Image (cartoon, one colour):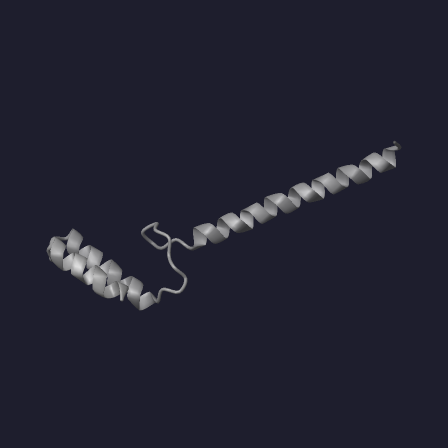
Length: 80
């Protein structure tokens, strides 16, 4: 094989490597971008108001403002 032929194959492998790295980076960024402020995965179809209501419910439960039963009932109602 000539030097020019080897150079062409090297270029092909470098380009394929770049495509894999860039594609992996894009997939990783999209996966990480779907996380909410608390680190949990966020459903794209879930509205901002619903997320805010769930966060408020969790916060009230964590602060001891509501009982476990009230928290679970609120969670069920928000899922409907």
